[in-house]
Length: 140
Image 1 (tube, rainbow, N blue to C red):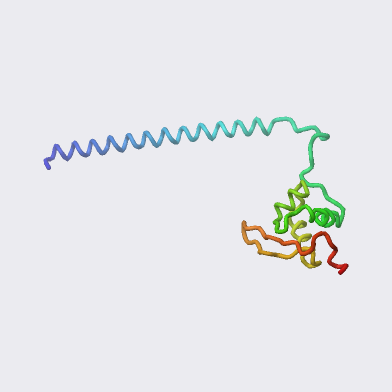
Image 2: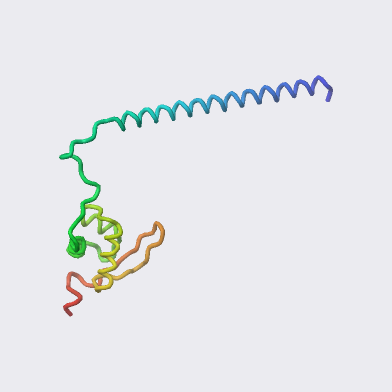
């Protein structure tokens, strides 16, 4: 390779570098514009008026002690033979506090209404099986 060929290759590589840098800068500028647009949109939505109190629904209503237990117990006949918490939520028609729901399900297991078929872990939910079809397990 001669010296002038070397210089041509160097210039070509420098041109490629500049073109790549220009592309990176253009991509960065587009991302910054998009970020600014999302920020402006969030600012305008945050500045939107709050819904009136009579229309606003509370995130979670505190229920009397034992009412969730009674609701889940009365929903048992509607559930399939094997079910998970999502089936219970559909039967209830709302999402109670997840810890309270877990506690109620464990109480129903201890009382003999249902049993654990499989135990959940991570994103896998526990599966339960009904032990009695509507009959009170404490009454024979």
